[in-house]
Image (cartoon, rainbow, N blue to C red; front, side, top):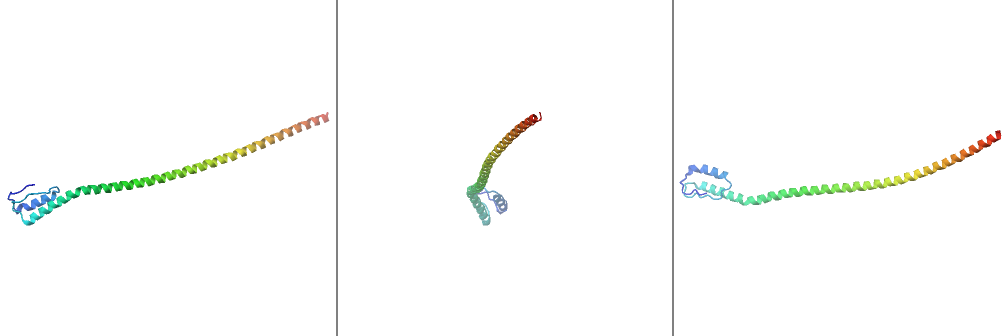
Length: 149
């Protein structure tokens, strides 16, 4: 900004300093040829240096903010990976438990099938015994009837 040779006096200093203090992008101001005090000139120089420093730090600050954001995202990703691994481990445990149960179920079915076959054999034997005893009873009835006649 060029404000040289405008014959500004000390009465404008406060307004100028207040305005410059609010401005964070102004890095150069030409105010020679005016009647500003040395204190005002030093403050103006300090303000422009502050603005230069802010502009220089703006990019690193953006990068720092991006680094913080990426670190946060990495932490979230690490947490998600851990949770996924825990869930996969839990799934593996459940699948192993399922296999054990299926194996037990097959074993129980085999045992029950063997018991059923034994019971069927016993039933068949008892039916055979009943049939033979019924035949014996029938024969004895016939003999008894023959003896009565």
